[in-house]
Image 1 (tube, rainbow, N blue to C red):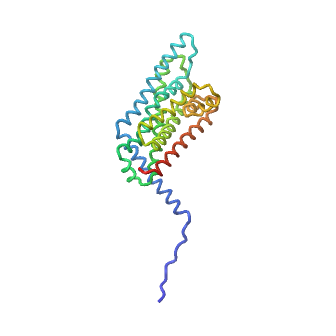
Image 2 (image 1 turned 135 degrees about the horizontal axis):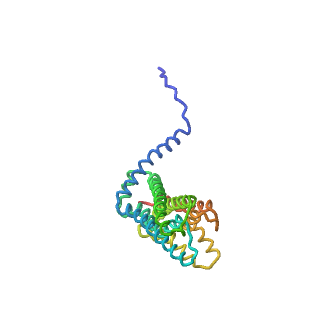
Image 3 (image 1 turned 60 degrees about the vertical axis):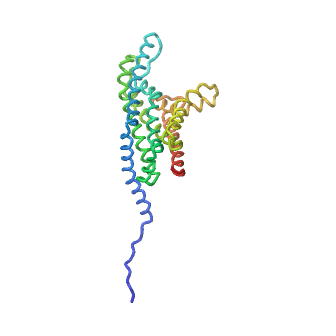
Length: 274
């Protein structure tokens, strides 16, 4: 006795891939929400963000007052107020970098990384969720910090801090992009080091130590290399400078630093045991 089988419909070759991409997107959204909850549930991390903002606003007022005092004594100290605020990131970025480092390293030190990976078994999803959250957080902090700090800087600098809308927009964008990408760089370093102290020290060396120390070396190729460090590129991006390169190149330099360190961190997270 012959049995009839139902005809099978042709299978679309790309359906599995599209479903996989859709599933990853569906998983990523709650993973980002989980990272936000974990981050803001720790007071130390929340305080790091607040301290960074306070540092920017307070230091901006001091720089404005210093510019006015020096200008009144005959020195050329004119700097648009938003650029004065951006320069405060030289110090304030320490707080934001520390927050980005602890976002991952505290999970290794406390052992909760195991629970995180059980909740998000795909390590790429966990890593991507942290990256998206930190980038958005850093971008918002940069914009808020410059926006709030411009007021006291302009008030204290008076005529030596006069600015226009272009100066403000450029500083807001530069600070937002830089802090967002800087926090991605620190996340990559954290995935490599898996240790809070090591990550913070490595980040400080990259962001502050190398520009300061290498800038003292009177060697042409070293001076050129310093121009391509993250902080130098961020300054060009926020001020609209044309030397040693333009804003487009500055953005490219920051993206390459972030992509390189994130990729190295991903390889470490993916192929090393927890």
